Image (tube, rainbow, N blue to C red):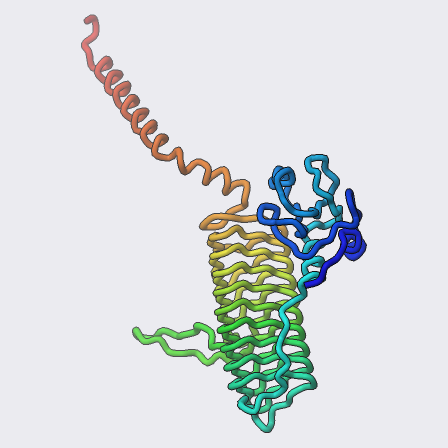
Length: 353
């Protein structure tokens, strides 16, 4: 952990200070949990009231405000500035340099790049290629013919099946499986016959895969995770699916086979997406949505089945009133029946009475 003055931090992120530039900052925290020596951030205006109560020594904001006596670091993008400061003060996880463990199992035909660190009981199969500066943690399995780019990190118990391609600076977290067979069967006379899955998984540069994910290889074509995309924990990507660049998939998302997501999509937790559809660029899908149709570029959708967000909000806001509406409809039906019966009775009375 490194200490910096608020003025030094502002210079580092290209911001400016409102208040004392000489305050020492040693760590970072949320507005509610921050203590003396911490810097916090305000990225959402609904938390602005916490500026009056926070114990942080400074707060990163997008614009100057008079609602606090705390020194401010004004930055164009407060959350991004917060990330930069976190990296400066704390850095990322440090990986122990172990070299090549004698207890790792590495095929004679595998190729290992310079400055790699391969831990105990990792297995690297025939003709696999591991680029420079990679870290392979204990009990990971790198299958036959797998290619891994430079500076990638493969955590414990990850399995990468044969032939898959992993780019540069990729992180695969513990217990994930890359390149398992897709869920493909031909059902004939009540029996499900397995279809060979001859595609591979391609994970492009700067992707992070969360823990306990399953990414299936394609039946015929490849399954692709685009550059810079980040996948949370417990995510399933079906065979032949293509995820575009810089997408964010939150935990427990399931994407069925042969679906295409464009670039910069955000998919909330527990979303389910059917197969063989196309989702455009810059699409946002709210948590727990069920997507069954194509979605054009730039849309925000929610609900199951997923609909455009504004329409969905109006529809779901009515749910709480449905019981009352049902009672009112029944009352109206009864009143209509009474009126109809009265009209029939009047029409049946003899003339002149």
